[in-house]
Image (cartoon, rainbow, N blue to C red; front, side, top):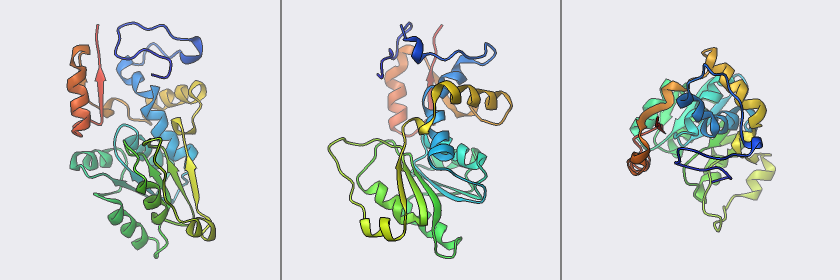
Length: 236
């Protein structure tokens, strides 16, 4: 996957794919900044441009969405609204900075409008595990005039997304895509790890369960059943 080995005890990697880290950082925690943490954090802070006082909706609270919640809270959002159908994930979102949680986007949108005199959220971050065609439209419906929707989730390459160009143009809304949260791994991963060392970023708390290498199937099953925020495979 992406030019690196997966679920193996050893790997040969190009130097461009490797980032040296402080020896004092536990590898279990460092592993999380290989994708999910910078993608989620950057979705909020860089691609979404969340600012102090913003109202932010995060749609999908998995390994990426939970870090979008962290990022939005770190950026100073007044309300971080987490959306997920699984109660466990909504509970976890509150531990990482979510101020409000809802089961679906309709509820989140109604709430965002209720606290903004009908305007809607400033930013909506779509961090679902599997993007469906209706998700970007739901994000656009939840934001105010001039607001931003960031799509980080991936879906079927053959599917297209129906959105209202009328709404997009006349309300000057912005639909932004993001890969790795618009982060630069070589500069931003060290920054995130420094934040972790300074107690400004939660990494250890993201790990719901640890697995051995021969428990990969169980780990996938738990992920699909929504039992984990992050499962980590460890081996000696």
